[in-house]
Image (cartoon, rainbow, N blue to C red):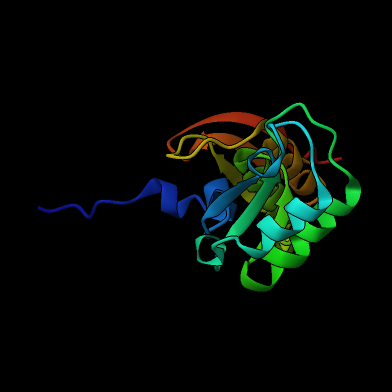
Length: 170
């Protein structure tokens, strides 16, 4: 007599949200202003403009550009505008920050774009383990978005969860 195996997790109706899915799919390329400073400290306008004209744009083509300055230098505001005007036409986007900061900004933007209507009155598990690190801010944001609408929120994997929130039946 053969008994049919049942997947109790699938039958439970629990919906898993994997935050890794919302990380940017494009490569992030760093643009360090330090590399364009005189003596690593001073931005000279004429030389800076010339250096920007001579940049190998192929390196930045179809990528997200993370603009940063790893030197302790004062950078005039117009320099950021000039960098963007050069890089934006060939890139996906130009953002301020380190590679990780830019990836985190995009993750937060992507979470804010989720259509949360599909999660109304649902049991949700926010996946906890993955290959890519997810910043704490993302877990706060997804919880804030789900609490008003979800029946329950858990953290982990459907087979092993930590309860976070359960809507009371008042």
